[in-house]
Amino acid sequence: MAIQNYNELNSLELDALKEIGSIGTGNAATALSSMIGKQVRIEVPEVRIMGYNEAIEWIGGPEEITAGVLVRISGQISGIMLSVQQLDFVNLVLGSMLNKHVEDYDGLHEMECSALVEVGNIMISTFINALSGLSGISIELTVPAFTVDMQGAIMTVPMAEYGGQSDYIMTIGGDFVCEGKKTPCRLLLSPEIRSLNYLLGKLGVSSGR
Amino acid sequence: MKMAKEHGMLVTYALGSCIGVCLYDAKIKLGAMVHIMLPLNMETGRTNTMKYADTGIRETIKRMESKGALRSRITAKIAGGAKMFAVSGGGALGNIGQRNIESVHMCLKRESVPILKEDVGGGLARTLLFDVSSGMGCVRCYGKPELII
Image (cartoon, rainbow over all chains, first blue to last red; front, side, top):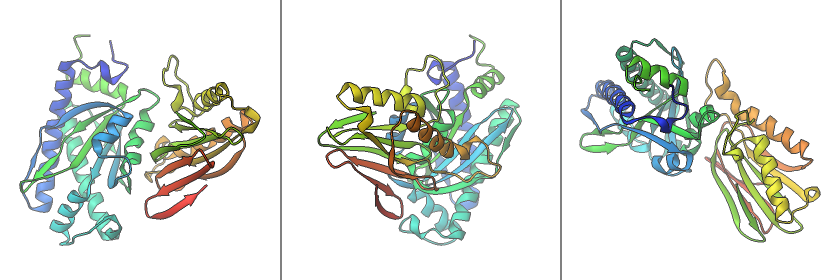
């Protein structure tokens, strides 16, 4: 039987998703590392199923300004993938790629934004490529969209998109560690619930139902 | 949904495509704020009715009436409904804000609640504050001065 809600996932299924997160984030970190020419390690990725308020607290407060790159996933599965780039991460990327440092998000001009979109896009695409290869599902991606705004509002984008199906949001992803410094770049994959069932079926872990 | 009487500040943070609806009965200084996430409640057996424009607004008005508000005195101020990401190719994603705005307008009209002021649409997230003692709303936006509604 297919699940209707994220919190019906059993531990085997969560483990499978965690593995996806691990492989996806690992690949994305490798891509990031080659782009910025620095060593990038990853924290153990997490699969989190959160209510709205919990998700906002987890990401660090609703009104905090942050940059976000969003890509829509379509094809055999659909969903949303977000790269939430907090200021430390922004400076890491800009420092390595453009030799620039910004004090706040007002310092981002066209060139800087473009660099961030591209880094986000490449990391997301790498993540999805890994997922696609692992599960044998063909996945298409849209052109990335970029915004700088309150992170609470950025988080509500996947919530609003799938809010009709669930009061919860599921995120798969993890943090990066670059040069010994923890850099909270968060790659978040929010699959649509039917796609999640399909994905789990493809991975062969939903047989127990 | 949050409600306060005579004094207090109602706040809803970081409204993206969501809409904050402040309903207010000025005579008894009863204010309520509801955070609308989606335009229509099409689910059966949903426990959380407050996040949909149609059921959320109706339910909030009902609860205000049970606290002594009169429907004919209730007014509304709304903010939100932004388009957070300009996704090429359109799709439902970019339209949720606009659909929310239209649905909230329609629902308030159906309940004969006049909208005194609004700050909707655009591409920026908003934080909405509502002072119950004065009936004044305030919209906070990244990179813009505060707006009184």
